[in-house]
Length: 182
Length: 124
Image (cartoon, rainbow over all chains, first blue to last red):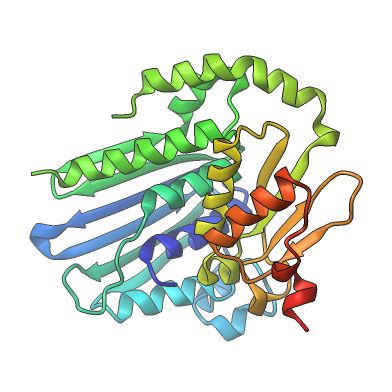
């Protein structure tokens, strides 16, 4: 993975496969504190303690459960290489929270990458799951909640329709760009 | 700036088209992109995006671009499968956004399989 946004795409796919109806994704660029924080919070089936204890080991987990595999350990490695780390909280039947933290100006921190593209791929590929995307840059924030979008689209709402996909992508990327404007 | 009002306009415009599409779902062409860890790491996201954009730009209402998990040949990712009703499935491997645009133009629109990108050609 070359960008953090690709890791996020991969990890959120775990949430979807865990049957989540709502996934909240927060990207927090705390530039004043020199930290980049990513949080993925889902209401999927969660993991038991036994599973959780070796979920970050790529070679322990892949063979028994395909659903986790390399994704989390790759994300953890990216965080650890950039003066940060990754932590997971999970409870069976409640959900899972994945938090990753990076030193913002670390030379080895991967670029955040195209979050608009990541979110559009997630939203259009998983129409039964709702997503809340929150992007903060210091004290400014941009929020997209697919439940609000679905309300506008009504019954005809089809996130796989190219015109809506393109609108979503531009809406998110403009929203993020706006956060960085002086 | 994109606004929510603009989304409402798109919705109103789409109403008729959606009905058309629902009627003949069986005749729709399906383009499937592998989006598991292996696919994403190999560059599947820009491929998927290029496919959606190209299909949208050309207004191909009877073409659906969808995502799937690991197809089982991780070293050949990004993999794109094209299913045209009544024809054999075509598997394209080691795709890029540029190759994806060509597949839409030549295979989906004109009906000519881009043989050089298929798994058969790459594996030889």
